[in-house]
Length: 190
Image (cartoon, helix red, strand yellow):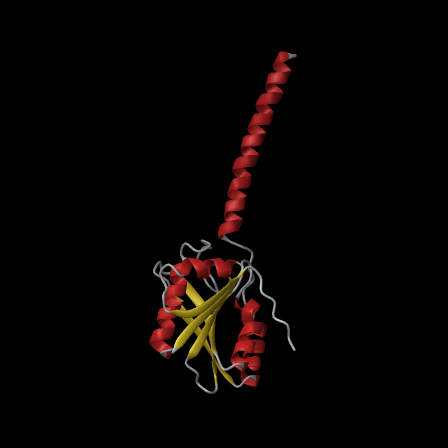
């Protein structure tokens, strides 16, 4: 009877350890590779049509992060050529399309808008690090805006994961005129 109990105990401990290790590996992989769909050709065509309807210039943009990861974004410039810019940062498992509604609203208020894909989201490469690298990525996007568009004011709005990354970026990035960081935003259309 003691032998059966010992064997059952050993099997249970081994199964528990294997489950814990494999579960940890699986959860770690999911955290570094969050489920995020890319952007389809049809979605790109739709965004291009919306930009044209809003009389905005759509520029497909990319930068290389310090670790060589290629980051992708759309830059929308209103016809008036404003020098006030807003960076919109999306949440986890989303991509820049998730912030496009806010971008269109801001365009209607005469702001230029940058919609970047975070690491491992949308069309950007790399692994998600939840702010460790992304805070530097935000700094690089502001550098890119300064170099190419010479803004009077750069604002930022982040939701969920984008809000957390934005708050982490503030330790290094001092050029924002104002920021909004919210765990979840809702914009009602009127």
